[in-house]
Structure formats: structure tokens, C-alpha cells
Image (cartoon, rainbow, N blue to C red):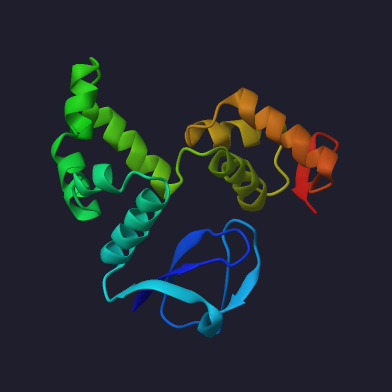
Length: 174
């Protein structure tokens, strides 16, 4: 069940789902006991509750007749979807090839091209290799697609943070 309720302090209207013990006004933050709140509309559908709240707000501001001419929230949502173009069409119209972009997005979601995964490659080198030199760490990182510059910066940062140490040109995790 959904109810359109109003705040007695600031007159804000909002939609409450279910029957909570208390609810807070989204504008002024005052907590209200649900049973003490005036319910302007009650419905089983969230869209119907949003529609009722919008109608009440329009009436309050003197736009009731104009609001009556509008479509429902569900109808406006459907129309908005009809007019939209998909990602592939947009990218092609922009002169871009959508396949490499989609592949990059998938890799990013898997976490293979993030800064933290590059850092992980450097720390893996320290775990896998026995007291490696900087050159060995850089080779390990390069084999996994991490640039030498990035690996060098990461080694320096990890050393400054005290996560690794360098003695005699060899690194180890602490």
C-alpha cells in the first residue's frame, strides 16, 4: 500500500510505502507518527500514488486544469522510451565503432583496466617473485600490460607507505 501524506510543519507532500511506525518529512526532516499523518490518497500502486501527489501539488499551485491535460506517469515513461535511441545508434552517428567501446566497458566492469588492478599486478610481482629487483618487477608488470612508468611509480608509492621495503636493489613485502 502507498499513501500520499503531508507534513504539518512545512506542508510538503510525499509518498509513503507500507505502514511504518514513523516517517520523516523529506523537506524539513521532522519525524511524524504514521497514524497521526493526514493521508490525502491511498493506493496499491506506486505510480498511482505518484500521480495523486502530483495532482495535489498542481491543484495547490493553481495548475489543476493544465495537469489534467497531461498523460499519466506510466504513459510519459512509455513515450520517453519511444523517443530514445540506443547506444549503438548514438555511437555510430558520432562516428565511433561501438564494438571496441562495448569491449572496453566489459573489461572495466570485470576490473581488468582499473588503476587498482595495475597496482595489484605490481604487488603480485612482489608476492610471486622471490625478492625481485626493480627490473624483474617491471618485466612482470610489462608481461601483464602495465607500463614501466606506472610500475616504477607504484613501487615508489608502496615503499613510501611502508608496505614494501627495498634493500640492496631487491624488494620485499612487509
